[in-house]
Amino acid sequence: MTPMKKLFLSLTSAVLLSISMPIFNAQAALPTGVQAPDFQLQGALAGKPLTFSLKQALQKGPVVLYFFPAAFSKGCTIEAHAFAEATDDFKKLGATVIGVTAGNVDQVDEFSKLECRDKFTVTADPGAKVAAEYQTLMQMNGKTLSDRTSFVIAPDGKILLSYTDRNPETHIQKTMEAVKQYANSHS
Image (cartoon, rainbow, N blue to C red; front, side, top):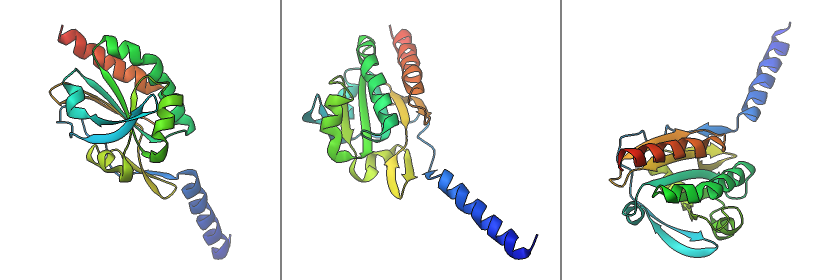
């Protein structure tokens, strides 16, 4: 094989690899046992604007905080439907569900109504500032977004679960297990 052909094949392989891997994680999510950063974000419940405060939500019990890349994307819609279906079960265990996105922040009102099915609050994280505090940033198609990461936070603010997985369907099971474990240990 000629040196020129080897160079061409190497460059072609590099280009194909970069096309097939457009997502880049900047860091690992905050681990269990650390204090969750407090935040307030604008969001919506059932299409109605509101301000969500983590501190206030924790006064009621544990919080299931899940970050997702962008409203109305396929995986995020699947995940929102699954959390909507499980919200009543989380409430029975005293937990609040909250979704946070840095993508399509102008669409959270509509997303909360249609895809979250009026069941839980979804908030906008413009500039991914809260996602950065929780170390859930990723780069996708030249944009900084929040990676698909779920946390369960105890009322004292300690992170009980930190789980990152691109598969939206596993997040419900993992967060529900952590909330049940917390509820059983505090009953």
